[in-house]
Image 1 (cartoon, rainbow, N blue to C red):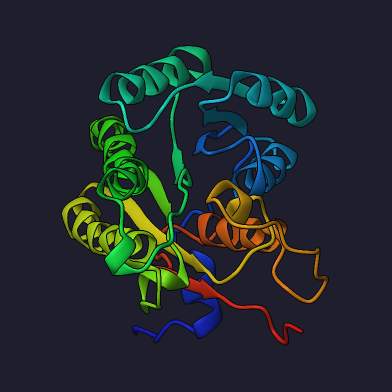
Image 2 (cartoon, rainbow, N blue to C red; image 1 turned 180 degrees about the vertical axis):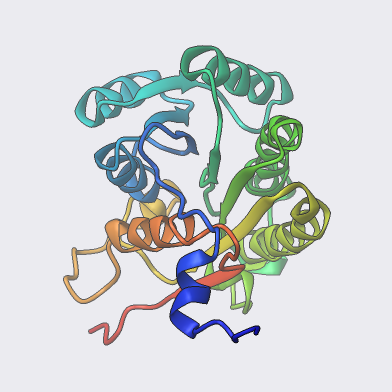
Length: 252
């Protein structure tokens, strides 16, 4: 006589796999500082093999030494660099499981003062660079029928604001690409995800030409976004978090 299985037996018999980052290969663009650095730090603590990517070799060397990570000097806006950084990761680690597409910067000006060349520079990294990094990782992910892409966008990619025409539109474009890639790659067991941080206290503002702001304990820290990224990666792989937005609770 057939007996309906209990809820407990269903759960205990379900074959699913939580992603264990130990010995996994993780590539992080923009990995020498800020969100990229803190994400690399947590991944290394979990036992992952981490390759941080950036344009500044001295900064990468210093960060890699502190983290216990490897590094590759590359500019994601250059196609040959993206091909090379994926090749180096595969040769060094023998695998590639995760891309954290974090490289990016801003440029802020009103429309009537917008500099086309500066806007193109933002798109070269934030849009075309993100695409190229994802493309060459995805070629490997499709061949192995598994992989994870996490794009670091912004709340600016969900709502525009004055003087944000270049940066905000680049993040809107990244959001659109994320949704397109997700639709294409799910059938290959590849999870394409996106994180939208609000203001995070990093070097983003001075790197974008703004004045450095005083440290504020109540606003988001880079490590907060790193924790969000790892929570997405470590979810059991029968499901995934498509998009996650992070705000400071009560910034002063």
